[in-house]
Length: 170
Image (cartoon, rainbow, N blue to C red):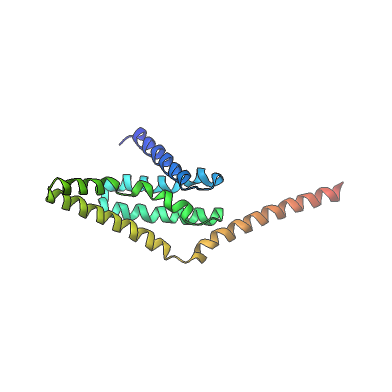
């Protein structure tokens, strides 16, 4: 795996996720950020699949996807679904469903069973990953927002002090 392959995967997952966000009527000002959770999810899956297998890599990807979506939704003060629904698109096992039904219609029941089981395992891993992060209370994520407010206030306080010093001199 070289850096060019990884770069192509990053760009493709970003474009796909941001495009689906546009289709799902994501607000235009959030559209550039909407691709980030999809990139996080796909790259987690892509890099971990050879190491830990399909199920666990999907689970890890869904965990990080949901975490990224929750952090972005708190930072931008918008619903979680803005980032989560589009971000899950790269993980959806569409080809597994297609191939499972295809083999079923061809009366190749062994291959249909293998693809169907693999697809259900993938869907279950995605479901568990989203559920585990969703169980974290919103108060934990609200700490991010409070930290942002205090940083903003401290910058405003420093500006006010500088301004008052200039006025005292002048």
